[in-house]
Length: 279
Image (cartoon, rainbow, N blue to C red; front, top):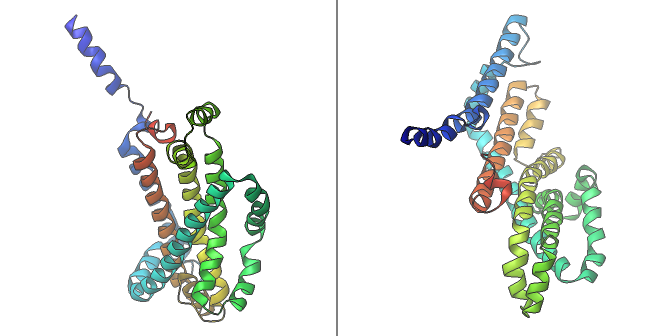
């Protein structure tokens, strides 16, 4: 009987599906990525493709290392624009979402303007912003903010509205103040939606910063990674273009991982979207 009970205790551990084991989540994409790089390297070497058409990964790595100093300076500038735009998007999006939740008239008046900002292509209005704003850094921040702002706003508004109607009635029955309702009911309801919007806005702020730098970099005024890519393309330094693209991609992956970690830390103990991640 004791053996049967012991077997029942051990069985769930042995029955963990293979795809849910933590080490496999890291090992599998790393293995596939290494195979892809190996295939790319072999393809270039076997077909003897010139480096100015398609450089091998090993050449890209060497170029990245040789130009690490100048590329890191440009990377820091791009990071500054990305983080600044994301912070402004969070600040503006959350405050405006709270106003929308508190006043239907404010929402009806201002939400169309937010939609206009969202649907207008940033590449179309970036040149105008660069003309109207004297500071190039401020113009780049505005461009990246426009791209990152709407996901924060729309997701936070949806989260604030998702609070249970029965709980709303309960708070109203006990005559809770607007601040108490916001703090104890609306904010916990909106938090998963806000973090989902944050994950989207994080990547979009990087895209907005790079697109804005491309527009401004054509005039030779910026020192971001997009300017390095343009400069390398003018000189047909294709390995250097790939090296700058690698930094952009790694930055995007880093942003994604950071916000995934934030979601696990904030929501992991109580919300289904993260608590059931390992099931």
